[in-house]
Image (tube, rainbow, N blue to C red; front, side):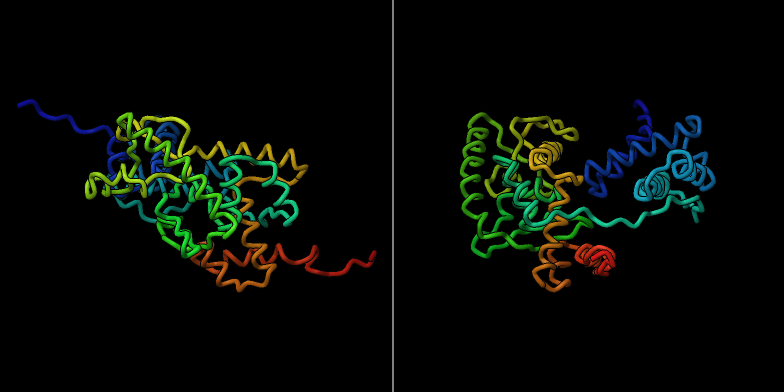
Length: 320
């Protein structure tokens, strides 16, 4: 019997990440950092290296590449995963020069600017922008919404597997309900067309596809904002309809900001900042806003209280 060759290192990394149910974005990012680490040390195998080499790579990222603290942390997480989960090695303490995390205030639009921005959008892009602003969603939370997550009778929107693998309930604006129902009629017609052509299946998270073999074709599991065309799943190779790509809304909002004459840097996430700030301006309790946003720590939500203050900590200028 022919002896089976051991899998290559990166194939082992892919397998370990999928076994732990990491998202495809995290998988791509981690594999990218592991490749960079290997090439940085002259294509040496990671099993021949350890904490000193990891420290050298992370210090290089901070000093020479000037990466953000979050970028360096992601690289560290990727390498810790490699050693702990794939190579079964304990690195011990990693003492690298760390990138500084800057304290920045979020960009927030006034209510009038927000209305102008949304008014310069159209079609599904406008509906998504209204949903992000009206419900406080992150961009990917909006794109990954399933039909079953919209509870019109309760005026509630269920965010499944949000940041930190947490579910939460947030508000569904009354004004969006008729727009969403009309939008879903068109989405359902598209889904029925896919079914008639032998497609109509959608990606299901974790092991749900095995547990419920027919669920991927059910209406409730379909994406609220499906892509305009079918595509091949990069993991399974199955052809199906995924959700819209995030760059679609990012580009649309950037163009809308230009048309609206807004000089501030604006992205879909800016609308989430506006949701939080405008709620606090309306005197909603910060704990309520924290829960709607899905923040683990109220300190994260507290950043919006700084935006509420007048310039210069509400001090009146002597010029006035």
